[in-house]
Structures are given as structure tokens and as C-alpha cells.
Length: 467
Image 1 (cartoon, one colour):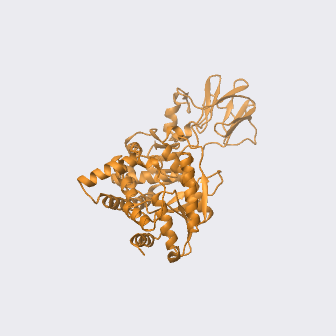
Image 2 (tube, rainbow, N blue to C red):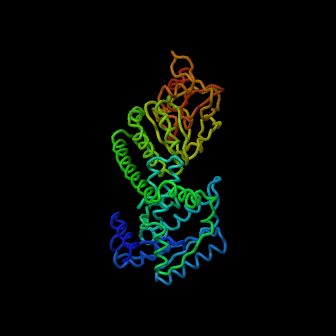
Image 3 (cartoon, rainbow, N blue to C red):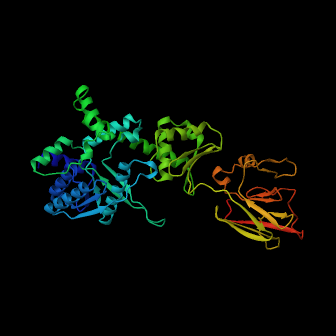
């Protein structure tokens, strides 16, 4: 057993990456790292007692060169007697002006994870010690916190994309058996076994940030400051991974004690958040975002700082984050909420008596003559004429809920009643001849409230009401 095989075996054992009887799908691009990973796991499969499969994703972005990569991987797996599944990932686009390289990575992981899931296998990728060092340095220069500086984890879970709302959430284990092996060791290993590999021409283009770090920055720092820079940076990433794991544990303890959950939302007392040590408070915020959003994709340190600033703001202030996530100060609480879509305004005319469906908010409003069987909780009115306007709230709305109080701003009344911000645009406002006669959740206007025995009394009923 050579040195590289010993290192891989030690990494697998130390971190519990594979056990006897496990299946593993190896992501094979055809590059040096993935060829080495395939070879070493094939050679160790008897020692480990594992079943080995391979997978290749052709993004079809490099034409004939990509097809040649696919053919090379096919021949390599045939020679090693390893079953191979190939996926095509055509039609990649920059979503919302995004980075094509990042979109390709997402598509690649999606296909590879599906292949691994079908085989009830772990997914092995060929990330190395050099990849770890490069990732750490890039994230450090971009201002990442402990989570980002953890770099490439030796083992993590990948959530499979759902194809429908009823799909069960599935996780695939992603492992990195080469994470403690340097690139020079891999080249030496391939030369020793006389193995060929494919070179992606774009890997030498320093217009890509990672390539510039790899070919320019790291050699400069090695020559000037530390010839052992790569293992030093990788070791630092490992230390930050330990720090991040500890902070996550402490954050979960805090959330277990103080957090409230409401239909997918997480609420944290603003005062508690403000009193925590800054680094733990930020971790609590990140954990809350992950719980509500499902991941931390696209969440920056600035986003976390913006959420933290809500502890000193007044109720009603909010921060908008990626993927329709909003975080709002609601009186003494900070609410983390994922919107299905932005609330739409609505305005309909309804006959009296009559019924109308409000598709924008999923509610139905019924207006009918009062009877003894009417819902005792429904407000009762005297309606002038035969039509009502049913609408969402608007800027400048004013309303009166007590005969002894003047009209007030509807916005101010909702704040006084501590009605959460996320509910306010979903409330039904009923208007008659230019005057608001009732707002869902509030008392009726006393000037229009009817006696139940009045023959002209009408009730207003809201189905699927907010309250």
C-alpha cells in the first residue's frame, strides 16, 4: 500500500466516511483528481468492503472536448470494471444574471446526487488539500465568517431537489476521501500507475478567480511567506470548521429555549438576541435562516448584520433576504418568514346579499341578511344600498372602532393591536360609499353597527380568516 492509499484509508477511518457493505458513487470528470479517486477506491474496495460505482455529467458547454471527456471516462471505467452512469446537463443558463460556472456546479451536484440516491450510496467527490486551501483563501479575502472559512467539509449532506410539493425531502451524503492529499501527490500517484487523465483547457485561464488564486496568488505567497502555505491554510480551515460546529451547537441550545415556531416561521425575542455575545447572536440568526429557508445559499455576512440591526429598530422594520425570505421586527420579536409570493392588492364589488372569492389571499367573503343561525362572531351592519367594496388596505386608510374615539390611521390601529406585519396585507377591508365599515380582525365601526333585530341587518363572514 503506497502513501496516498494510506492517507485516503486514514481519512476514511478518521471521519467514518465509509463502512463495510456501503456503496459509493464516484464523480469522475476525467481530470487528474477524479481519476486518482476512482483508482484508489477501486484498489481499496476489497479492504473496505465497499461497492464502487462511477458517474459522469456532461454539461455540453465545451462541444467536442466535453464529448471526448465523456468517452475517456467511459473507457476508463470499462478498463477498471466499474459500472458507470452518464448524465447530460444541456441548456444551462445564467439564472438572473448569475455565474454560469456556479449554475454548472449546481446542475452537476443535482444529477450526481440523484444517481447516488437511486443506489442508496454516498457520493464521493475528488476535492483535494489544494482545493481546500484555495477555497479558504478566496473566502477569507471576500470576508467570510467562521462557516465560510470552514472551507470544504470532509463530509456533508446534499438535499435532493424536489420535483413536486409532495416529494419527501431526501439527503445524500457527500464525502471527500482526497481532502488530505495534495495535488503533487496525486500527479505522482498517477505517474506511478501510468494513468492518463484529461486536461480542461479552461483550468489555465486566469480570468476565473479560482485559477488566478491557484496559478498566481498561492505561488507568490509560498515564495514570499511560507512554502508550506497549502497545508497551513487547509489546517486553518479545519480549525474554523471546529469553531463553526461549536457555535452551531450553542445556537441550537439558545433556540431550543427561547424560539417560538408558527407555521414554518421562527420567532426570537429581540432582547435575547441583543444580549447574546455578537458571534453567538449571528450564529443564532444563521441557524434561524437555515431552518426557515432550508439552506444558507446566497446569505452573506451583510445579510446577517442587517438582521442583527433589527434588535435596535422599531416594530414594522424588516429586511428582505434571498429566496423570498423576510425578517421583521414585530414588537418584542424578530420573525423569520419565507413568503410564497409578494402579497397582491385586490378590490372587488360585491352584491348585498352576495359572495365573492378573493383569489389573491385565498379567502371568501359572504354578505347576507342576519338570521338566528348566523355565525355569532360575525359583525352585523346596516348597509346603505346594495353593494359593498371588498379590498385590501391602502395608504391613508382611516378607521374608528369606538364611539368615544376619533378616527385613526388604520396602519396605527393595526400596530396598536400588535397585528404582525406579514398579516396586514391579507386582511379584508369592507367599504360602503367611500367609508370603511369594517376591517377583518377589528371591531366594527360603531356608527354602522346594527342591532341584530333590525330587519335591514346584514352579516359579513370571512372564510379562511387570518385570525
